[in-house]
Structures are given as structure tokens and as C-alpha cells.
Amino acid sequence: MRGTVAMGRLGPDLSHLMSRSTIAAGSLPNTIGYLSGWIADPQDIKPGVLMPVLDLSGPQLNSIREFLGTLK
Ligand code: HEM
Picture (cartoon, rainbow, N blue to C red):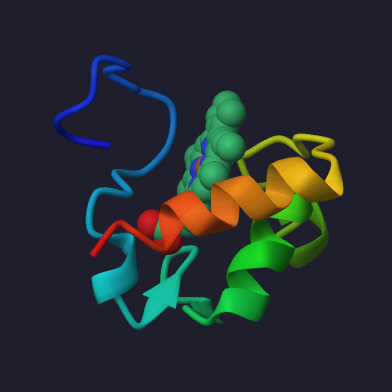
């Protein structure tokens, strides 16, 4: 994300995630359902992808989803 102190370098830039119509290199429609599925288990959707399974709890997944929704 641009404009944060985290200065992340590992994955793609998600700064304007919600303005895009697809995610995961164009392979998935950017809907709340696909986005949640991706964050919960990217390896199931795209085996071998360089994003690990994060093993998030339901509440953690909800918080992240809510935050991602603000990235217009
Ligand atoms: C809560 C933490 C995370 C969230 C919310 C998240 C979210 C996402 C999302 C939404 C995408 C699709 C992006 C796009 O289409 O441009 C993505 C892709 C990706 N993420 Fe993550 N991610 C997280 C953690 C990580 C971590 C820890 C890594 C690496 C160690 C990582 C590596 C990647 C990579 C390499 C991709 C590109 C996959 C592809 O397009 O084939 N992510 N992530």
C-alpha cells in the first residue's frame, strides 16, 4: 500500500484495489466473494502462487476485508 509506514515489498501494490475489475493477475473477478476466498487460501485458487496461506480467523478475515474495501 502506498502512503503507509509499512513500506511493503512482498506482494503486488494494493493501493487502488477496489478500482480494479480483476485480481490475481487477471484470473479472478474482483468481487467480495473471490477476494475473501483469495485471502483465506490463495494456494487453493492458484497453486504455487507466491502468497502464503495466512491461516486467519473469521474475525481477522472480516477486518481485512473491511479494510481492503476502503482502497478505492
Ligand atoms: C493480510 C495479508 C495479505 C492480504 C490482505 C493480501 C492480499 C492480496 C491480494 C488482494 C492479492 C491480489 C492482488 C492483485 O491482483 O493485484 C494478492 C496477491 C499476492 N500476494 Fe498477497 N496478501 C497478503 C499477504 C501476502 C504475503 C504475506 C505475501 C508474501 C509473502 C503475499 C504475496 C502475494 C503475491 C506474490 C501476490 C501475487 C499473486 C498473483 O497475482 O499471482 N501476500 N495478495
